[in-house]
Image (cartoon, rainbow, N blue to C red; front, side, top):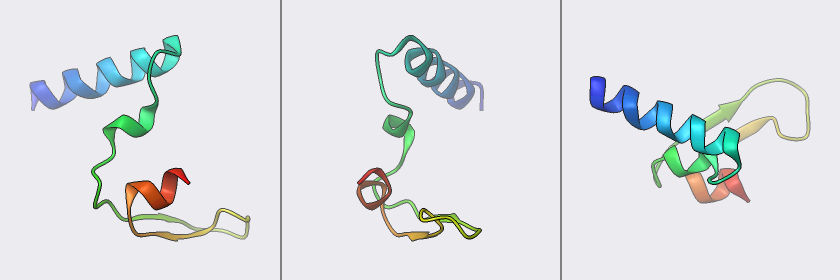
Length: 52
């Protein structure tokens, strides 16, 4: 668990510094759902689809 925490902390630090995207943490096969009424509200079936 500590290793995961370190990976996420490092990714957020890199993102904050502008040296990497936070999307580097996403698994290729992730499923992401944004609820609400905005243009982005829907189900994304992969990291690639979400990033696009």
